[in-house]
Image 1: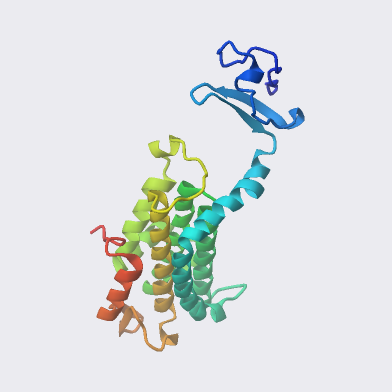
Image 2 (image 1 turned 90 degrees about the vertical axis):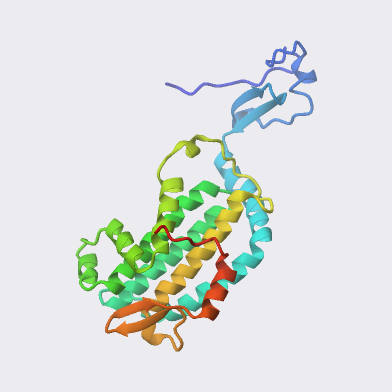
Length: 284
């Protein structure tokens, strides 16, 4: 079916809103319109008494015109959060970077590659959020949890590394294994899956990409979620490279290749300050 061409009403034509006025005295009054060769459609919004134009460069405008303004609103509100998150991520990168290899096969290089993948997804999720895509942020962020869960699974279960390289390590089983070792994984994975990845009624509602305002609920969720992911990236990185950490903050070695989550009271106090008292609740 060929696309329909909608022409803008003439200035002296009756306004299509049904007011009985000429277009130039109604919805055409003081409403600049794009050149006709760039016009995809025009509709009359009767409730707000306005004409709505859709232009052929809508994607380009979103990227180059609207996106930067939305990102600036995010950056302004989230500046302190981003600085604190960046500091936590820096500690993780300091442990993993020198183990990265183009072809990873051994335990450390494989886990370093997975952690770097989680970090790349983390940064991508921030860029998506910055440009106003509130719900898509959650869908992308689940990939962080999957990468970290796989890393934790490999670190704590003998034979998991070989199954991973053979392509036989089931990601859902990795999430279950990670949840047993570290319960917050199950809670976080469930939230991101059920509310953002699995299509549900909420996805059918109108969610415009617009500038952020302080204390809006979606932004509060995104910022607290970003903090959790940054913290988890560090916690898993510390476990993988435990022997490289002068003073481990979260893990205690109880036997060969066996570790227990055992943060100090001071660390728990910092964790509550960084994450918030209610951010992480176990689903047990």
